Image 1 (cartoon, rainbow, N blue to C red):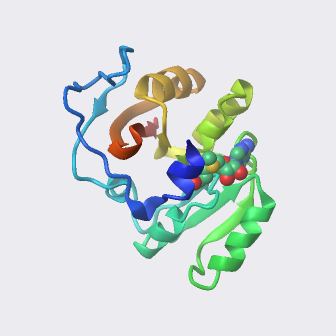
Image 2 (image 1 turned 45 degrees about the vertical axis):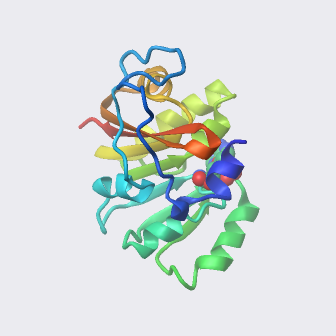
Length: 209
Ligand SMILES: C[S@@+](CC[C@H](N)C(=O)[O-])C[C@H]1O[C@@H](n2cnc3c(N)ncnc32)[C@H](O)[C@@H]1O
């Protein structure tokens, strides 16, 4: 399966419902691994949009890292979060998005960028959103580590990196993000699609002052 099915063909508007799985305790993914150090929260009845809203204001400067074909930015724009810069490594894809959306979302921007070598000054963004992009890059460890550092560098102090991923808090937060940089508070929400038996995580990590 993975990101094409989970995040491109079934994007934001489908809402990624998540449920408390019977028998799971906080910190226990049910995968036989102990999640030391990763606090994970399970709250039923929320959607991914609801989970993002606490981190956003209508003024937030948002970087959508590896926007792909997802309509998440479009949905966010419709909810009043308009200052979104969508970046991706595929020029072709960006051009199609620009053509499709520039009339209906005039403040939205699209730009070629390599997540591992961002051409933005430090502290440029209030919120950076990764949905599946780090996952797509993580087979190449130096590449993804550079992307983690770039996200930290371009986020303003106090800003949030939101990572929607298949990786648990132990993996994404402790083994990856915190190995690359000093992050402040990180909060994780677990959600899942029972039909696909696939668990997702939304990690929100704050850059320290
Ligand atoms: C799995 S898709 C996720 C797309 C979208 N975020 C979503 O939720 O559907 C990964 C995206 O990351 C982009 N990508 C891969 N490597 C990248 C890199 N080094 N820099 C920027 N984007 C990259 C791909 O072109 C692709 O659009």
